Image 1 (cartoon, rainbow, N blue to C red):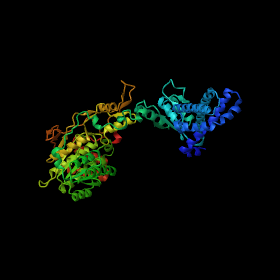
Image 2 (image 1 turned 90 degrees about the horizontal axis):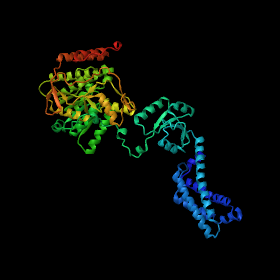
Image 3 (image 1 turned 30 degrees about the vertical axis):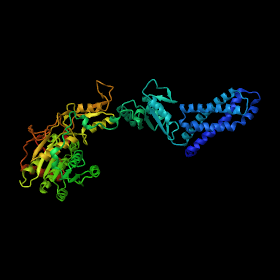
Image 4 (image 1 turned 90 degrees about the vertical axis):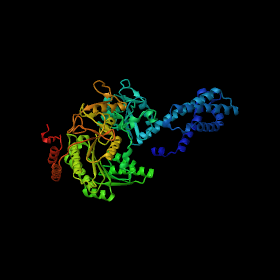
Length: 629
């Protein structure tokens, strides 16, 4: 029977309803004759009425098609549909009176009134019976998902109504925090307290829980969902009606807030200006082109109208995304710019040499590096080898190929570092400084270094981490209440990097003005409050999101520095400064690189860390794992 119900077309369903209503017409008239006990008896009066029956039935069919009552499915038969049935019964009563007068049948007006009332009751009752039959067929003819609805309010009640007659889902019970509803029945379903969920789920073989509490904040819904998932239940959330129709502001709920919203100062938005000439009609190679900084370098360099952009990247996925993005821009704007994706590592000297020479590279922007502090701390040898030897290989081959400019993208963590990542970046800086000194004056490559702090919104940075934790209901994790960092948006950082590269003369270390350092605890509060939530703490125990202090991670500093000497000199650009720092003699740099290569060949992490400790000012080698208490 279930298969037959499923195969019915809309026309066939309409025909079924018309037949049902047509059959109810004589049944309603019989009821009217029985109820009034007219003179002449039921048989004689019914025989007289049979002459009018076809006309009234056809009138009823026409009325049903006109008001559309025959098109309403039994599962959707509600208050409005009952009203249409009342209209149908009223017109049938009028038709009965009219045809009786035409046929000169002396029926009392009360008969027609009772007929109409009986038809109305039978029509409504027949649909209720048909709905129960359909539900019974579905219930016993298919494997249905049994669901528990969390929230017995208006949304949950409407959800149960919508699920009635659903082919695969059966609502079994409600759960609600409102003690006034617990123990009662809503939509004929029992309401239980949340503490009974495990028992109710087991006793009723619940497969899924539907959260129908859109009035709760998203973090609180996420917290409820996590508790239910730990019970082994599948959880789904129902949006509010205002969310579905777009009447509620959902920007902060559906998409992460822009990282620049948390900058705490005015973003540097000065145009590149004369710096564009440094890249215009040039061949520019960008290493680490698929990363956050590298991809933005690609975008802004493309805007300078270079002749060719070479995107050098180790990650296949990252390279694919940035190439597709730039190619779309080039094709849409019909730019005469060649895009060359190169999949490889900057530590591969043969590949690097081939790319630089064959394409005639004129400018190198070196952003490729391992930058995630905890990961590099856990893998010190890989971090040192990639960041130091990658820089050495690319810089030496650039000098041999006659590249005009080479810019190393460094970090404020390179200043008196307490972590391996910072130490590797400082060693890379020392390599660049040494290479710049030993070049011949003729046709020399202009080497330079630029340092800046954390980039808001970049992969692995704190704001996306906070937003991800926020979406899961918290808590937001901060390592220490006193931790503070310098921040820039990736757009302003890259703009200043390109300007610094354009004014470099040789071996300068540039420092970008990033304003005042931002407390991470304050940033966490901003992320929570900007999403429309409240911080949950001792002062506000009913808040939405908690901030958890986890303790400093290995190698993490309370605050970062920008220079070793503290000396800053101005440049042509107000947000870009230079600092003079003493490097190491070439013989010491050579010794450091030789020891690091020995550590790499021997896969000796301790030896690699000794290199950083010996040649990087301020770096303290972390204790071996066995010594950590």
